Structures are given as structure tokens and as C-alpha cells.
Amino acid sequence: MIENNNPEINVDELMEKIRQEILSRQGYSSATSTNNNTDASYLTSNIGSRIGYIESLLKNAESRAYIRTKWPEKLNRFPFNLISKLQTLILKGINFLFKDQREVNFNLILSLKECLMINHQLTEEIKTLKSQIDDCLITGDTHFQGINERLNILDNSIQKLGKQIVAVDTRFQGVNDNLNIVDNSIQQLDQQIVAVDTRFQGMNERHLRNDSYIKNDLMQQKRLISLFLEEARQRLPEPFNQEQLQTFVSENEHLLDALYLAFEDHFRGTREDIFNRLKVYLPLIEKANVGTPEAPILDVGCGRGEWLELLRESGYTARGLDINRVMIEQCQARGLEVIAGDVIDYLASLPDNSLGAVTGFHIIEHLPFKMLMRLFSETVRVIKPQGLVIFETPNPDNVLVGSNTFYLDPTHINPLPSPTIKFMAETCGLYNTQIITLHPYPENAKINGQGVAERFNDLFYGPQDYAVVGYKHE
Image 1: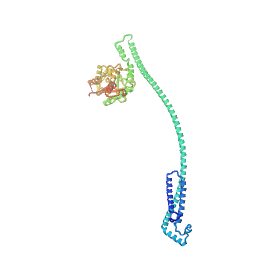
Image 2: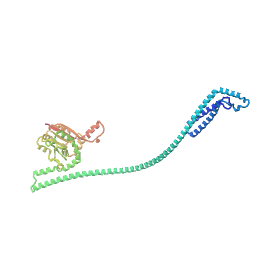
Image 3: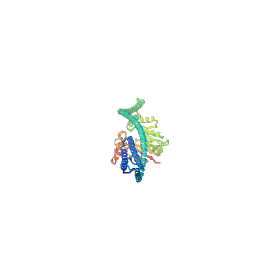
């Protein structure tokens, strides 16, 4: 820099201007960093103008930083226009006195030049970056515009699809409502069909029972009439003798055979039901090792033959005995070996130790006490050692059975408590006897609870039948 007493160049003023310039640039940068909406082109041009201003200041400072060899033009007037030697001397003195200041000014000027070059480079870099950013922004804007257009198209498509879905959903709701109406109609129709079918089944079952009863009864009546006519033809014109009259009396006992079969079909249950119930006894037959040709099974009062049919399917040898001719004919039509006869008379005709087992289901309640005792005695006599005896009967421990359902069959005599039958069986020679309770009421018929409720269920909804099972001593 030049000396401080130069009226044209004020070093302090120049330094103050430089400081203000630096502060203004810093303030500008700060404002720029906080203001996101400043235009980049304006910033570049502003920086360029400021750099130009600094360059002019540097040129002025540089021109004054060199050694003075010429007296200033403004000082060539009087009284400053001294002789040339004195001016030269003064200039040398000044140059010597301000030698360090010139060096400092010169270094400062070099530093400022370097800063200026760096600023030029930064400006170029900024321009390059601005150009690149502008290109990227233009490309990005184009790309985003394309994306926005595609998003708009996609949004329109989604809106259209949403409307279509709503329309389809509305149609499906309508279809679903129609299906519900149709389903309700079908359910109502199905219920009506079931009700009608149930009525027809009931009518069909009653018709079949009545038809079977009528056919069987007519067959019995025809047989009796034929027998009567035959006997009458043989005796005419003589009266009937005692044997012929006894024949008529015997035939009179079978007048209700067809009716009793219809009764069994109505109250006893279907053949399939009885068939499944009797399967509980098969393990006893297998364990006793009976049902062979050497130790056959005799089922007394075989009825419709469900037990005989089950034994045959299981591979056992068995035959049945009954007095109902209609039931015997049905068993024989199924290929079962069944004979007609009184149970006591038939057992009495058999030799000792000739059977493997004697069974009877719902027969002992039809016999009076003396005949029942004889049944047990004859049974024990005819079965082989270790032979098996099974008799099933209604269980009077069940209050509903003992007071009501037992008397549905008018041919039943008395309910038989299980301790009584067990005692009779053991008295007649059976050992290892046991009572098996069977066929309780279904669970939905019972009441919920404990204590009294459980006792009530046992008494009223407990097993409806029981079986006495025993074996003959060796």
C-alpha cells in the first residue's frame, strides 16, 4: 500500500472497504443458505460483479505498492514543485521508510490475487454445477412429469376399477340376496318334502305292518279252516272225537301269531337295531369256545331270528326254537335253522351235555315261576361242562321300565329283579354268574347335575335291560 498521508489513497479506507466486502459476502452467503428460493443465476452474476470490483481495487493497490520513482502530478505545483534532486531524495526517503509496508502490501496483494483466482475457479465450478443441476432438474422435471402423467392415468384406471368393483359387488349382493331367497325357498320346500316323506314313511310302515299282519292272519285262518274241513270230512257223519277237539284247541293258540309279530315290529325295534344290540354278546361266545358243531348254540324264543343271523355271520353253529309259526316261517325264509316247539318240552327231549350254550332274549319274563325254575334246571342239564347260559330280560331297576314299558307287552307276566334271577341261576347249578346291564336311555334324555340328579338319572334313565350270564361246572 502507499503512505497514509497520500490525499488520494487512504489505506485505512481501503482496508475498511475490503473488510466490508468480505462481511457483505459472508452475509450474502448466510442469507443464501437460509433462503431456499434464491435464484442461482442471480447469485452467479452478483458474485461475478463483486469479483470485478475486487479486481479493480487490487489493480489500484498494486499500482501503489511498487517503489515511487516519479513525483505525483498534483504535487508539482508550488510550493511542492521543488528541485528534482530534492524530489528524488524525498522519494528515496519515503521508499526507505515505507519499505516494510510495501512488502506487507505486496504480500497481501498476492494473497488477494490467489483468493481471486480461487474465486474464479469456484465461479466456474458453480457455473458448471449450475449447468449440470439445471440439466438434472430439467431431466428430473421431465421424468417427474412423465411419472405424474402415468400416476394420473393409473389413478384414473384405479378409480374406474373401483367403480367396476362397486358395480360388481352390487350385482353380487343382488345375486346373493336372490340366492338367499332361493335357498330359503329350497329349505322350506325341503322341510315340506321331509314332512311329507315322514308321513309317507309312517303310512308305509303302518301299511306294511297291517299288510303283513293281515296276510299272516289270513294264512292262519286259511290253515285252520282247511284243518277244520279236513277233520270234518273225515268224521262226517260221525261227531268229533277228543283228539280232534284237542287239535282245534291247539290251533286256537296260534290265532294271534300274526298279531304278535306286528307287535314286535312296532315296539321291539327294527331288525337292524336288534342286530346291533346283540353284538355285545359275541365276545362271551368267543371266550366260552362254543358254537361249534360239537357244541352248538340253542336260542330259545328266537323270534325274528336276529341273534341266529348274527351267529351265522360270525361263523357259529346255532339253531332256534319258537312257538310262533309266523316268526318261524320268516326265519326259515332267511335260511335259518328254526324248529317249532315248547321250550320246556324240547329241552326235556335233549340228552345231557349236548349243547354248548343256551340263550334266550326277552323270554323268561313270559314264564311263570315254576316253569322258569324248570327252564334253568333243564338248561343246566343239557349244556356241556363249561357251557354258557345267557338270558336277557327287561330291567325293573329302571322305574320307567318296571312301572310302564314292561307292561306294553300283554304277554309279560311279572318283572324279574336281577338279584332274583341271579339267585335262581346259581341255585340250579350255574357258577361264576354275573349281571350285565344294557341299553340305558340316551344322554340327551337325562337331566344335568350331580347328587340327586345322578340318582334320578340312574333310577329313571338307567339301563332298560339286563342279562344274567353263567357257566356250568365241569
